[in-house]
Amino acid sequence: MPSRTGTKGRGKLQIDRVLPGVGRFKLSSGVTNKRDFHRRNDMITRLSEEGKADVLMALKERKLSIDAVYAACQGTGTTSMAALTATANLWTTIDELLPSLGTSPETRKRYELSLSKLEDCGILPVTATVADLTKVKWDEVRPHFRGAADWNHLRRALGTFLTQHLGSVTHQLRGEIMGRIKGEKEASEPTTVTLDDFWSAVELLPEWARFPVICLALSGARMGEYIHSEAAHLDRKRLEWKVNGKTGWRIISVPDAALHVFEAAVPARYAPKPAPGQRNSSTKRYQRLAKAWMTAARELGLSCTLHDLRHLSAQLARAMGADETAIQHHLGHSSLAMTLRYLKRQGQVVGAGAAAKGLQLDKRASKLMRIDADAVTPAE
Image 1 (cartoon, rainbow, N blue to C red):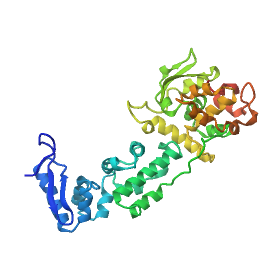
Image 2 (image 1 turned 135 degrees about the vertical axis):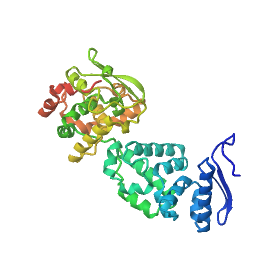
Image 3 (image 1 turned 180 degrees about the vertical axis):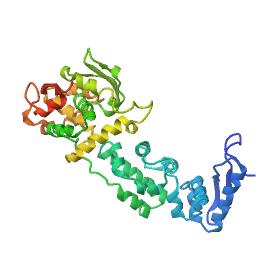
Image 4 (image 1 turned 60 degrees about the vertical axis):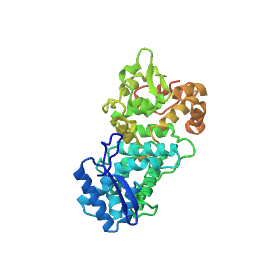
């Protein structure tokens, strides 16, 4: 009589055998029903008789799940190691291997976050197999990830996962998948965008996306702060916008002449509000705006994300004479060191043409915002 897992002996039935070339094979069958248990136990016998020691060792070492192997044997009848690893359920396999990915807790947490964002974007269904990664249109996945570093984290996470699952960094399937995911060069300094670049990109945006993007540039708000903000958070009388970010709630001042921009942008009416606890990158508010901006930026040849507009906001505030502490509060940074990183290249961004009373922007700025040029002064 096979033993069961659980303190009261009511858990899943365990397979406990000694197999040639494998040694003691002790593994949960994944089922509680005796008839299902015997079917899986018979499968182990068949694999042993066929000399599939590699598959049995992969099961023993938790590199393959018994559910995935059983499903493959029932469906295609194949028991080759290559086929089983390729047809394993992607998300189940990731969940099983996550605790062993990475050399440190920080790396494992980073990998978990990246792979969760991949799952949340909805491009790969819950039934996806590992081999389905070869069918993904990665240019459609890219807008769900913020910048080059965020994207490269996903690429490293997938590479590490595939190496461990497939057993080799040179595995043909791994090479095919990784060859489709192009890494990006990470800037050693914060990404910068000039005012001319910004307004050129805004002109290319669909009309529904223009005020949200201008609002982000004026306020320096994070995307997460913006997409979760509602109309009640905007105080029209006090000209204040209350946002909830990484460092808690904070107040962003709203330029009087730009109030209608904030009124049009907050809340993000172009998509449904996020569900409670929903990851930012999986919300329609985030995805739709990010896709619109990235399309416009790429048409101009710009390497600039919506998050980079926080850099622009900080740099403009500095050009208008705001001190570092005021800009730190404006951006909601917990440390001044991060703010200084944002300001590092500010002189190259706005140039010497910034006037003492306001930035002299071209006419299209006024046309797009329907306010005079002085209204683009960042909130301090």
